[in-house]
Amino acid sequence: MATTLDDDPWGPGQEPLEYGALVARFEKICEDAGRTPYSLVPRSIMRGIAAGLSRAPSIRRTDPLKSHQQRSLWARLADEATARPEHVGFVLLGDGGNRELAERLGVPHKTLATHLDTWRRTRPRMVVTFTGRRTRGTVPLHAVQLPVASDLVLWSATTRATVDEVDARPPHPLLVADAAERLAMLGTTGPTFGAWPDLDDAVSDLGAAITRKGGEAPRRRLETGRHR
Image (cartoon, rainbow, N blue to C red):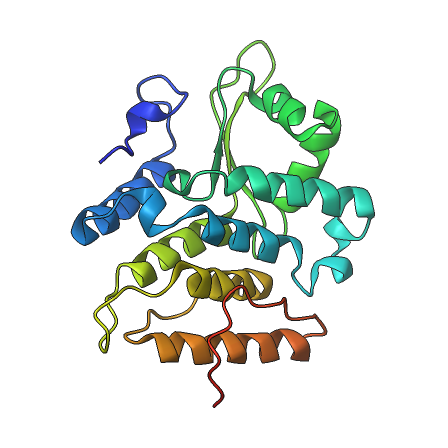
């Protein structure tokens, strides 16, 4: 496996325990499936998760995301958190901490700190922040997690590791991407599926749920041609 904690920008013992536990689960799924992280959860799925996080029906009604500036920053943070599947929904930071992340997102570091503090106070939490020990009056930011992204990376990996009962193939990555985007919009995960028609039906059901919540279901990446 190419995915190890040795790839992370922290010194020994600095990585959050939560991150290590999720990475271990992801590595185990990849190992059991005999797949690399990028073949199991390719970029199309990660883009689907990021898009769903940015288009959730509740976003414009949520106080921390009512302004265009806040939504734009949230979308850029979602992109960072879904850049690599093996990072399981975390944005990993080196010694630069908050300033490093602010530079990557293109905002003043004080603006970022304010928004992160607001987002981590929501229920359920939009973000979880991980900090080190206070030094020279400051608390260094080590990592930021988007819990929904973490859940959906693991869900997608588990779903893609499941071989179809009929044609003995894993679900098509674009079908999983369609499902992951809709699940991200609803802020949830779903069960794994033993056959691709079941997953295809789930995509349709999730689209209907998004519509009921006042959102607009995204266009599908994979048109299967099935009609229930």
